[in-house]
Length: 152
Length: 135
Image (cartoon, rainbow over the protein chains, first blue to last red):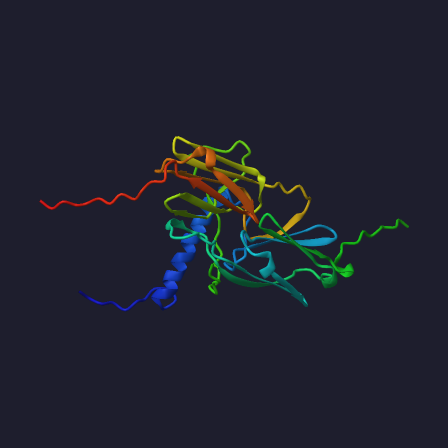
């Protein structure tokens, strides 16, 4: 059998594999777009975060089912918000046989850049039904102001 | 109860394949992640269903098929989405059970978006040892 030198794009077979993987992922997300109406920014870091806003505030939400609220820590420094916490393994009583084990215990830590200037003193957070909501009032200079147009 | 230092991985939700059957509400449905364990007394099902409150849960057991449906609390706020990493939708999953379950004694509780379902077996089944006879 003849061994040929790889001459694909990028010079390395790994680059080519990566390109193929990206291609497949794009093809897959195009197929799944029936469900995914909005283009998502998938970061792959737990927890996944959604950001929303209105005129006055920014709202961050994250799904944290079964996370101990006592372990949840939230901090804001400059324009970076950090969320930390951990999830315990559910205690099983006595000897049991597992049929499925899909839920994952462990710890997490995620930082993200807040896209708008906020009033960090007035940040509020609440945890309900396994969803963390962080409400961040926008700093005065970041709020949309209505400008009256004078007719001369 | 063990404290784990392992990092949790992010997972995208898996949409439920209803085999062409659509929901009337049109919203997506996702398959919740579960732990299921069994002992002599019964089965325990634990499902991650963030956003589901007790009144949004519908649990059904008939013909040995366990159906879990969790409706998320609707967001009625008028907010503009800046970025979205996860989808919001109801949860749906079915399991076929091989054990006879005592329907009267099923209990369900939901806390912090986690459903705990205990399904006691009808008669505590004694593990039967099967002797293999060699001929």
